[in-house]
Length: 424
Ligand SMILES: NC(=O)c1ccc[n+]([C@@H]2O[C@H](COP(=O)([O-])OP(=O)(O)OC[C@H]3O[C@@H](n4cnc5c(N)ncnc54)[C@H](O)[C@@H]3O)[C@@H](O)[C@H]2O)c1
Image (cartoon, rainbow, N blue to C red; front, side, top):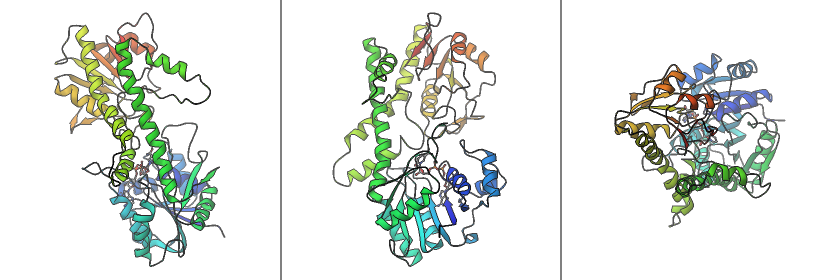
């Protein structure tokens, strides 16, 4: 008898797509989020997540989905999936407080035979060492016997039109083989392909390997961007050529720094775990150092460009285009636009921004003026810095309108008519 009731704990970028697809697969889905606003919005049919439309929420609602912020209103569940945030603490270590709280909630709601799956990104060992004891204590049942416990990393790529939850292979790792069977059976009803890891630890590690791989490779091209400029080499062109190799190479591109919830944060979880062994994870620490320096490098380049026009940064009108961490989405978490705006302001620049996805923007609690009319604002700025090449931007046109343009994405086509445009 397949499981019917599914509880998703944490209804954000990861939890909400799961709600939608589980409801579509025929499960009766309840969503629990500590935010009453989010729960109420979803019950009213409003999505707060870029990749999920209001129509999809309405379809899930029609299939029986309800959201709640009241744990007491939730009955026992066949499957409980934990999708809560895993940020960094003040000391840059893992902050598992939401995972712990969600495990306690899950422990109170599970019954014999329930599958609990953790999807939040975290360091290897969390499922077994942190979540398992909390579930066992709250339920009085033992994992692997009374209930199943697995880790299944989320691989959501916000804004990706090609790959979503259903057609991205789903990794599952159980704390016992029977737990993996249960997780495979559940996700097999939602996703096209389920990949079994040897255990929960390998599944946890797989996710961190993926993110660390991106982090390190982005750092590699960022470091190259800095010296290629001094050597007079067009790195974007070199990457374009290298990417024609049909095997053994994946292209990564330089940029103003890394953002989002995954790349700047998750590798810290792994380096934290490695440090418990008494030595550092040098690749991650180096990548962090290089990527973390990119906003300062953007400022250096911006200063050089203005200098070429005999202008100081102090008093210059600088327009930032695209302040989200990724193109074509509204998510601003960890966006390098923040430190860039902060540094420009500290040097006396008059900073404004434009972003079709961001109606208002604050840096250090202070509003940054939004350019309402894009093209006149581009033409009026002493310097335009393209931070995110959103599809809405007609880049050749904006390049012609700008006086000086620093293209941190290598996205503006180079022409003889735009010598005032420089790529990072
Ligand atoms: N966003 C992504 O692209 C992405 C991709 C892969 C993995 N992940 C990982 O997935 C996890 C979730 O990330 P997200 O982007 O969905 O976060 P999010 O902030 O978008 O959503 C998390 C939700 O959980 C809620 N919440 C917090 N504590 C709770 C609790 N104790 N009980 C119930 N709800 C609670 C919050 O109110 C929020 O709505 C993180 O570990 C993240 O690293 C995220």
